[in-house]
Image 1 (cartoon, rainbow, N blue to C red):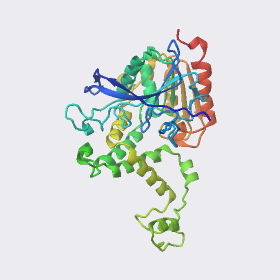
Image 2 (image 1 turned 90 degrees about the horizontal axis):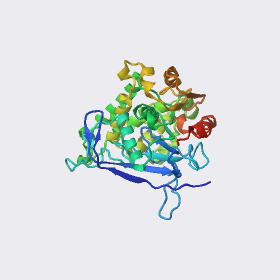
Image 3 (image 1 turned 45 degrees about the horizontal axis):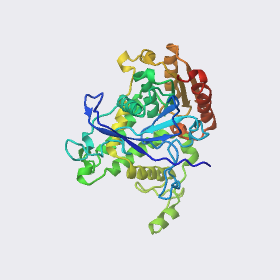
Image 4 (image 1 turned 90 degrees about the vertical axis):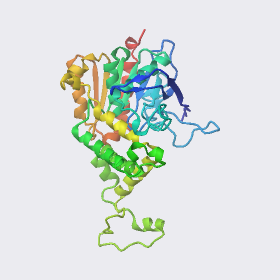
Length: 401
């Protein structure tokens, strides 16, 4: 296996960034990774937009002090992007950028507010998908890239991809939108709000200024992640992986150094607080892990950006009218068991694009994995993306002069 070692770069922008909220973000930084080589006419650039808890580290590995790949340091879309993969970095120059407001290096709530000398915390301005796209466009300017061969993203990254085709239509030749939607349903907004309430009601939240108090709202973050994780998996996957299996009582109590409690005839402990089912143990593990590396204010900002995104809002809800500005060619991919970003939402976008006589390819993958399918190794999904990049994005007639 060919291990590609990557090193993040930091780009500083001294020109303030006007935001859709009316606020202005002063000088800011974006953390970026690139993969492959930019060709002479700079026509092979592919921008990857990340989802809620991802980052600029899209593919490849980070290295230890000896230059060897660190275990478990592969990028979040490592199975999709790299030498010889569906998005082949032997051919394409791939750019991964961490959005402003994130907690993975780009300017965000944990950074210092130049006006106060304190962490931004809750004072960090509200950001939107459109703001992220504006910042990404400035990054391309800094790299000397005017036109992208393609923009690609899944989930929230797919929303950014769609927004690219509307904000900068002349700079995008192809758009690959995976497991996404033109806006969130009321149910999705509701899930986001419950997760946010878990965070802001944590006693350690301190109105979003927890860093000034030396605390972290880990309890709220744990619950937020547990809620989110439930929505990323399908019912079939949960039943297959966990079903109604109980967590082995003898193992749990051996680890705790105690004696197993008495159980009823079906093995239940009949406790209101103990972890009894394997699905409970799994969710708590995911919540604990998330609370150790993710920032609470970042979670609030990014879920709000999800909620606010709605390009059809300015067109009386008419998506076809909103997408009339797009000139790119599209590949859309959805997954049958993804109930958070269902195939019906992708088909809405397909119809709106066809209403405008745009070139659209659509793949609806019968996969059991729910929303998480866009990150997994489904050979049909990867083949569809590979074919699109090889035969459509990479077709000689599509290449920029």
